[in-house]
Image (cartoon, rainbow, N blue to C red; front, side, top):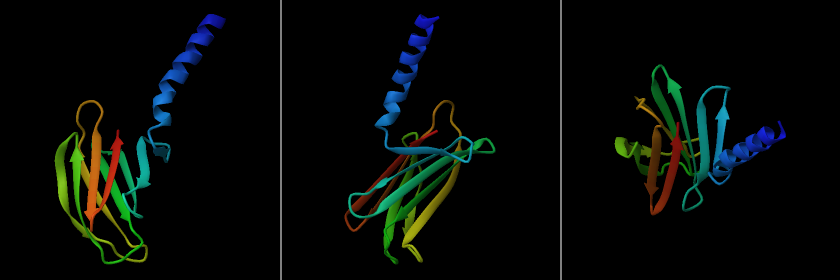
Length: 129
């Protein structure tokens, strides 16, 4: 019995270690939501969230620069392919903008990359579901 318990502990530790260096990720609301947060190349922060939604995946991306009126160009990629692109302008009260999209749920793990650029500052947010 001790041998099995020890092997189980090693397995649990080995599977948990890759998540330690993965950045700020959290599950929210008791569902299958995955949220990640981080900083851009300047003082701006980003947040990205992915969650299942009626057989599709809803992806919510947010850029928060604390400055109103900035226009950012952005691209959302799903499994490496462009799913959406556009430009958005930060607005009050917090000097931020959000991009929300619903995409097909591909077989296996779905990976999303949201990249936004303004005046030389670059934000890159990634999440997998």
